[in-house]
Length: 245
Image (cartoon, rainbow, N blue to C red; front, top):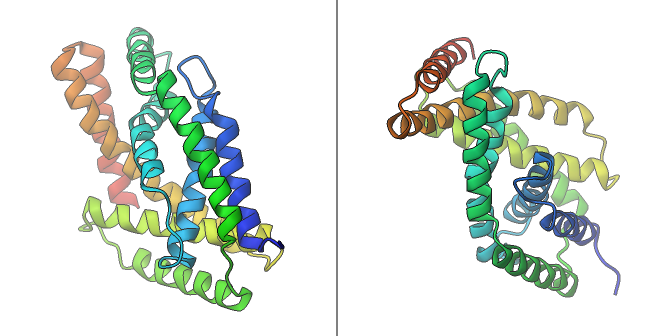
């Protein structure tokens, strides 16, 4: 059986996620969790864009991805904390991170996830999803165009939810454009760069919103001066980036 370009791309992403399962943990590099999530998000985004009715992303895998959301957000937060200013806080924050990973990424978690990914990989091969190249390119360009329209329609009054929707829209556009690029269907390097820039802007706002919410909880549970200082820093940064973006 001749596999379609889309099937080859999707199965490659699932295999990449499989390789990361054993590497996700509190003592491992944070890049492993990120690579795992990106690989599956690529699959989910392309399925949603190209094959919304004929092929579905396993709901169990959606649940596993959702479970890792707080872990990734915490990793991003820790990377943004200046060790020269918040040396004492970092020690406790890293301890909290370790506990979160230990609780979420158990042996049972890994085994079930590994089984689900293998089953999903096999089902992709068997179903061999495909899409006409012209239709694929047209859908990708239309999605990118709509994203730009929504982005330039944003204002200082745009809600967090509206910003998040546009951010997710551009993630899908970027993954679709990268598929066209990497499958040698069309060179879309310039549009991919534009998606990255917009993603970074909206992603920074999204991260700050999450960090402010999480730090509020942390300050209630651990009323330390440095945690309150971190909260004030994040609030100021969010206000500033909302005003300039």
